[in-house]
Every structure is written in C-alpha cells, then in structure tokens.
Amino acid sequence: MKLKVQHLFGFLFAFLICHSIQAQDGYQVGDKASDFKLKNVDGSYVSMGDHDDAEGFLVIFSCNTCPYVVAYEDRMIALHNQFAPKGYPVIAINPNDDGASPGDSFEKMKERADAKNFPFAYVYDETQETTKEYGATNTPQVYLLEKDGNDYIVKYVGAIDNNYQDASSVTKKYVEDAMEAVLTGDEVPEKKTKAVGCTIKWRKS
Amino acid sequence: MVKFHVSLLVIFLTLFLKIDNEDIAPFKVISFDEFEEMTKESSDKIKIYNFWATWCAPCIREMPDFEKVNAEDPSVELIFISMDDGRKPERVTNFIEKRGVKSPVFLLDDVDFNSWIDKVSKNWSGAIPATLFVKPNGERAFHEGDMDEESLRNFISQLKQ
Image (cartoon, rainbow over all chains, first blue to last red; front, side, top):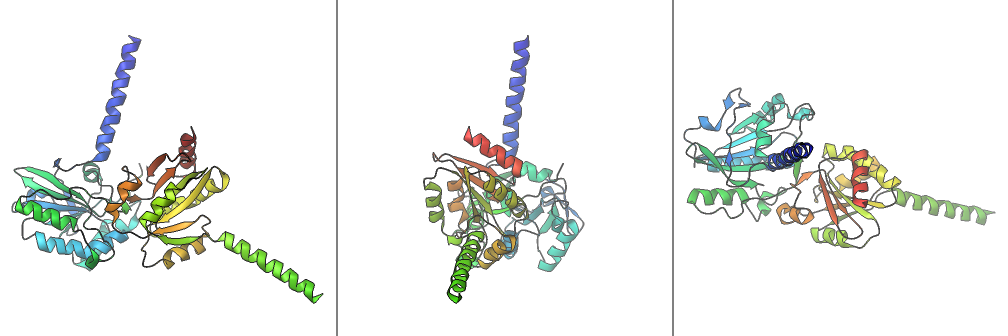
C-alpha cells in the first residue's frame, strides 16, 4: 500500500511538472488560441468574437515602457493600416502589472494611445490570465491568428522584423511575410522567431 | 631633493592611474561571432555572461548581487553583455562610470536577434535579464529572468556538483 501511495505521488508530481511545462510554453503554431475580454483605452471591452468582419488578428503583447516597443510603435500602426482592411486588425495587449511597472498603468496606456493616436485597440490584461495562456514572454511579441469557424488558429509567433533600430535596414519582415502567406493561403515561411525584448512584469503574489 | 619629489610624484601617479584603470570596467562593442568565440575560450573558472541593458530595471537591480558574488567567489568570472543600442555606446560607458561597474562590459551589437538567440540557448525567449553559465569543461547552463545573490550562489553551487 505504501508503494502505491508513493507511485500515486510520483504520477501526480510528473503530471504537475508536465502541466507546468506546458503552461510555460504557451501557444505553438497550429494551436487554437482563446478569446479574451479585455478593457480598451476607450473604456469599451474588446473580444475577438465581437469582430464579425475579421478574418483573423495580429495580437501584439505590448506596453508603454519598453524601448523596443517604442521603437516598433510606428510599425505596429503601419501593420494595422495595412492589414485591418484585409481583415486582420491589430489588437495590442499590455500584460504588465502596474504595481511592478507603474508606467504601464491603464491611465498611462490611455495617454500613450492618445499621444500616438493608435488606430487599433490597446487593451489591458490586468489579471495577466490571457498573457499566461498565450505564453507571451516579452514585449513586443506578435501572435498572428487566423479565424477558422469559431476558432483562432495560431499561424505565427514572434518578432515584427529583424531590425528594431531602423525600419529601413530590415531584411526580414517576419509578420508581413507571414500575413502575405496567410492571405494567399501559402505556408508561413518562418513560423516562430525570437527577439531580445523586455520581460513581462508579473504581479508579485 | 627635487628629484626625490619628482620620483615620488611619478610613483604616486603611476599607482593612481593603475588603480584608476583597474577600477573602471573595460568596455568594448562586439559582434555575435566575437561573443561566441569568447564563450569558447578555455578557462579554469565558471564564466558568467549576464545579458542586460541600461534601460532594463530588473537587470540593473540584480547587477550588484552579481558583482558581489563575483568578488567573493574566486571560482567564477563575471562578464556583462549589454543589449543597448550599438549606435549609442556612451549610454553604457556613462552607466559603468556612474554605477562603478567593476566587471568587463561588452555591448553585443547585432540586432538580427533571431539569428543568434538560439545559439546562446534554446531555452532563451529573448527576454532580459538572462544569464549564460559556461563551465571550465565547456558545459553550458542558462537562466532566464532575474536572480538575487542567494539564487545565483545556489545556481553556481549546483554547477559545481
């Protein structure tokens, strides 16, 4: 009996480890992404399900305080202006806890959205549940989702392009290339990329 | 007598300049290839490459702990790898001077991040702070996220086992 209990604990332990690894990894290309209901800077709540006319989304984990995000804000606006008319609007999600990073509070988000005149929704993941589920690791990080019936299929995860410093020196436009592939029904050439970015500022529990 | 004074002055200045030099961390802008070569150099110490940037608050918070452990544990050698903008190295050199950073600092100037992040570690998402440990036998270990003095010491003692 003692052995069985040990086994049980062993299985439980293994299960917990596998579970936590899975949770940490977040969404991979091909996974179904969950919808969310998050507060936008204009006071409304935004869900992907509310966009009947959308074919998919460019969900970008973003914030106010990260210099890499600041370097990419104009390119995020350009992506929205380029792909929203084709059915793929940008939704920017701020995942940062405002206790850990006061510059990322909802009020500061409103100020930033006003100053930059964001044409896209900029929503706050105050509970950080969506961020955890997606497995976002840093800002900025893009999830390209394609609508398939009621599902949102992950087609690309990663950086916007390969030169944050200078848009004119970019040699790989990861998100644009992935978008063009999805729009023409082709295989996304690079499905996952990495970039140096700012950590997510998690709530201290 | 004058000669004696001049000699003293020379000795004093030499000492002073030497101390001054030792006090300020060496700094250099490097490519990823140069970084990779650096991590492959043989050493009898555990090399600790800490990825940071002057604008990264959690990175700056952990730096004194890293320098303390480095000063107290002769079996490790700390090297700071800055992710700052390579076009503005003065941000890093000013920081080194202001904060009195002792360990060498290299600014890794390659923004094509996806081409090299996996070469540092498959486990690295790209978020900083992050730290690469290279043991004398060439074995590597990696930690993403910040570390305090205790967690760094624990990590090092596990590497020694």
